[in-house]
Image 1 (cartoon, rainbow, N blue to C red):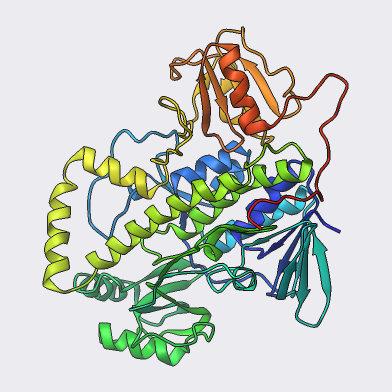
Image 2: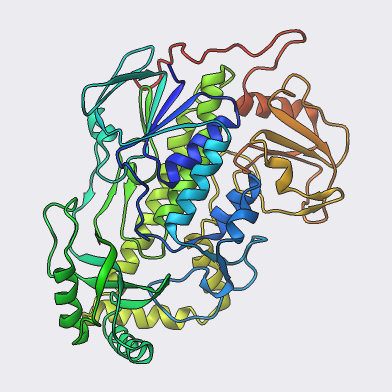
Length: 492
């Protein structure tokens, strides 16, 4: 019996599987598709996601497959504005990389760490008790695990099976997205596309690599069943309606549809079942935040769930996942709602757009908005002075960079004084005596997700924060209790 079953082998599920495997958790990933989805639904990674990859030693392999766009950070509702200045990150760029490549690299990483993946396995039903979760597949096979995480998208069967509500706003607008070949010459295609985008910000067509073009166009209406993909004829009809030509589109590699539906799960956990990624939140894809938000959900959940499985999680640790990540999703929903309104052609939204365009001429406005879109402005409410709750940017230390010290997914005490100690927690927290001119603190305790849990110089003040995030101190000669299948009465 695996410790954790993950439903969904997309970027969220793959990232979560890898995070759990860093701590020796037995993970089984199920995905209903027999083959990986070739559709390029996302085109890039934001600075916070890039930081996440760097913190786990993955960034070089992603950089080898992508292209850096410093001017793409904080792109908001297709408003032309200079790149924001002075971002609080060592990675002030968007990494252009097609989603299938991101999916493949993350899944290869998870499998390399020992995660098992089964494709062509669709979850049909979920039932749980105090000791574990039963997962029934289409075809009748039953599996059991101590925990189940739904990373199975906006129409999550896992979420529905455990009765977690998904309130929000239904779709008002739908777009068709296709990766296709075209016959129109490049110069003419670029000219027509630029002309149409001047009038319809929801339209676009341009090169997507491998000789293909990526076409996005508003649909004629909102389809009742979004699981049914659009046809090539639908795409051609809508291209002609908006551009006066269908550009000779043919031989599609993928055709899909997306909407501006906006929904947020009422909770991220019920008993032994948790949600991450689109299973917990859906929103318009404006700003390209969906995939990034899912990767960051997985990064936040992995170490907490591993702590629960391995038996050292303090009371309530697992519930801090939803308490911290749900407000982040609410903020993303606010940003994408606002951008959806700014794309509407009516006089009111266009007037607001003009005002915001003027405001974005101010560097401070651009920086604030960019850091919200890029995931850099997040500060969890952990109590305590700045920078407690914030993600720690990468900095130079005497021995090199900070982020490589986080590759193992453990906590980290960065100690400038050499007077602090993690005795009793050394199996969960690394102690590094070093400092940086960029960190104005004698001691800094980082959680495995890179967020600051404590700053200070006093050992007596540090100890309760170690216990808060890393459980009870280990007594000399005693290992951490393995309670991977023990009851957890929270949120029954």
